[in-house]
Length: 351
Image (cartoon, one colour):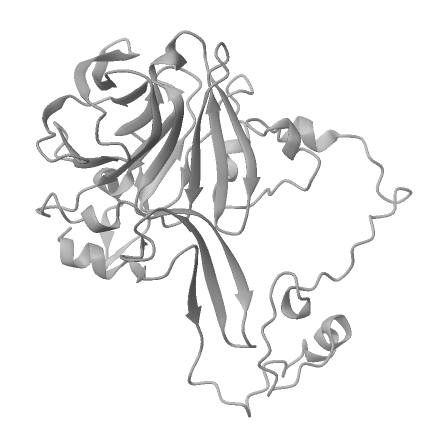
């Protein structure tokens, strides 16, 4: 993928903490009745008749388009509470303080908090796009990241069409810590919004954590360390690293991928080591920091043939979440929660 194609696919805006992106349909005029048709009467009974000229913003807290049909609990006489859902789809990786609220079951990151059939402890990957993410229950622990496009498999072409395509999952890069290898860490989703989920990965023995915000479309995978020793694991071999520029580490892998690592504190340094064993027949490489670190690490895969500097000016603006609001019957806006020194000057790079 060429760098021009990559960057054209990104939404780039230049404001700070709250970054709005507005979408609408300019071809739909005020004379259009979006309620017309057989569902109009039923819809009006549920939400009322909406005037075509009403352009007031209808956010998730202001009612209108996002207003709930009702907030009363379902009848306990008709719907008995027996906890059977927790047996069918057990919840994992959710912080105790977040269990007192409705837990999303169909968000893009839902696989991270629902178990598979393997011992009721593991989970499938979730697709943030362009990255797939996993919370492994065997070493190496941490935020496991795969650039899925590298592994795309297409069905045989028939009459110019493809019936299916698939992506296998590989541990291209894992944001981890040395302390996670003494004891398996805990994963805790502690907050979420319409953009994604906030997650901490904690060292059971020492109590220190690595905090990440996983957001749909994020250009970087990030983790903020609080006194842990950063470790970057991959199932591939690291063939070369270039840390000649302060604040940027370029990591070349033997699967043809190149990743760029940005530490918020450029005094950190890394050494290459053999990684933990991934399977009976395979092992990879690791970058291990020179000591405990308090700061943020961000990684992104480089587009094919792109210059190492392509992400430099955007690396200091980190997305932390997002919300959706309705501006009119045909328009909506996305507001990104951001953090970092570059958000004011350079803006947010987001896919």
